[in-house]
Amino acid sequence: MATFAAISPALSAQWPTYPTAKTPRTAGGQVDLAAPTPRTADGKPDLSGIWEVIRTGTGQAIVGADVPALSRTSPFWNIGTTLEGGLPLRPWAAELRARRVADHSKDNPDAHCLPLGLSQLHNHPQPRKIIQTPSLIVVLYEANGGVRQIFMDGRPLPRNDPQPWWYGYSVGKWDGDTLVVETTGLRDDGWLDVNGAPLTDAATITERFRRVNYGSLEIQFTVDDSKAYTKPWTVKINQRLLPDSDLIEFVCNENEKSSLHYVK
Image 1 (cartoon, rainbow, N blue to C red):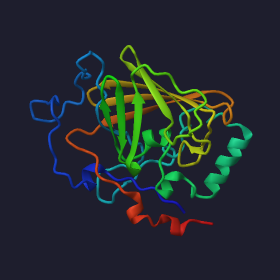
Image 2: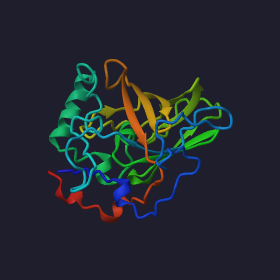
Image 3: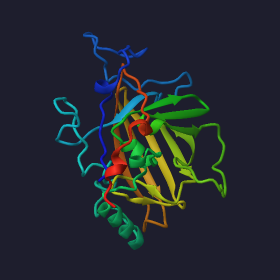
Image 4: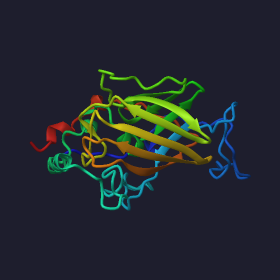
């Protein structure tokens, strides 16, 4: 059976703590997470920082530590958990997800040290780091060392791109204070969550990023995939800032043992 462990950066990192530059702080020296949204020199909201998904579980991810586990009803496990009626799966897609669950998610790319899909990356317990420039936004994922580029230079999405991508091909633009990112060119065997909700090469994903305040990031995630779903659907993902921290090196293949125990 595949196992997915949640690792707290604060507990597992070996980096020495170092204060994040230009961070608003309270009189007591604590990071003021409720401070106003920071902005870049051109006046746009600055999404830069290290972010982690807000955990909703009641158990402990690490024994003896105040690190909540990710519940099996969380979007990490079931991306459609907040949708009334669940995901609008086509019959073949519902059957595929049921098989993946019955197989204990043994073919999940994450269990084989392969890149995760965009939805899993947003909901994964390991953090991600956003680096923002006017023409390019780069997202570094601690999980499996992933790197994603969001092109902000006005280029269009490529037409009939023959190369499928784990993360797709992403272009972004600003709609007021919201970053709107459109992604196509995805692989045909995608996983949106641990339960195996499918994503195909017909999909277009639209993400709307809004930094609510200094410490909060809201992501509206819309999937339009007519091959796997009967209609487009949207979920909201909330993340929080991890100040005075950084990503740690995570090389999955160095100590990968879970595949030896998969149920055949």
